[in-house]
Length: 147
Ligand code: 5GP
Image 1 (cartoon, rainbow, N blue to C red):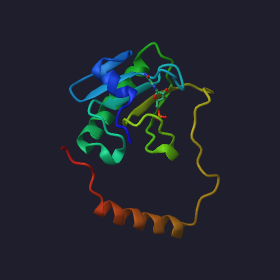
Image 2 (cartoon, helix red, strand yellow):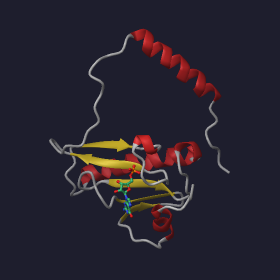
Image 3 (cartoon, rainbow, N blue to C red):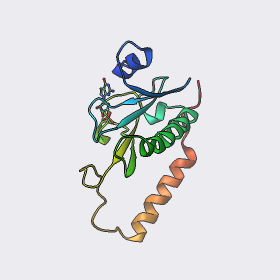
């Protein structure tokens, strides 16, 4: 897959963006098609197409910046009674730009944004079965280390 994305151009300054935060590893800017007014994207400067490719240390920094910007949104002129953090990993999850990004979405009552839980609770045995499977995989998983 072509590693190029528009976010690489934004990081390099070749494409315009409305920046709200920048440090040596992380950039945050306004989403060009906001889900709600004030919608931000927090991205690593080093391109990683997916969570599997993202250095977990940088992933931690993305969350720290998102946490700080969530607080900033509440203090800013953006209408913000709540915040959702959202990350789409993979086409099926809705990922469109293949440079990892954490959405920071300000929320107001009735804004129409939302994720839905299933209407029914699965049997405990089903939850325990999947929990054991994920625990086992987590023990084997090797998150991308800094290269
Ligand atoms: P995804 O669906 O991959 O999680 O989200 C991609 C996000 O990137 C979308 O919310 C979309 O509006 C945003 N986006 C796509 N192209 C650009 C761009 O050129 N500039 C900015 N600021 N946001 C973009």
